[in-house]
Image 1 (cartoon, helix red, strand yellow):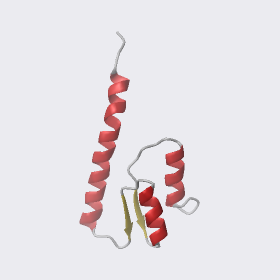
Image 2: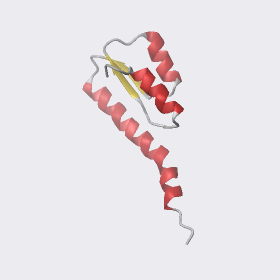
Image 3: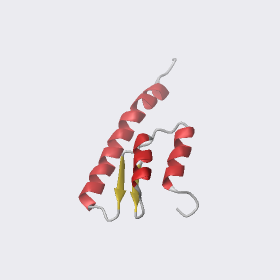
Image 4: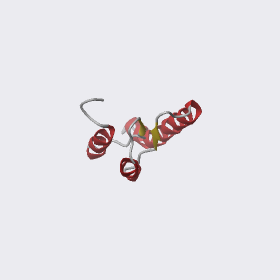
Amino acid sequence: MPQVIGIELQDSLERLGYQLPVIFLTGHGTIPQTVRALKQRALNFFSKPVDDGVLFESIEEALACSERWLLPLRKRRSFSFA
């Protein structure tokens, strides 16, 4: 992403109220970036190269988190006043 770095995107999503599990995958990550991302509730922060199995496990975890976070929203939207 040449125009926006990942941490800036995470900041923007947070300001807009989106609760998404974020996984960082970088070739040039620093410890301060990692700490900042994780403090802002990133699910994981990986430096390349990363083991495929570890990455896929993290993606599965992110999907499970997303499902848990979206469940209350889906329940509210399906509630009917009929």
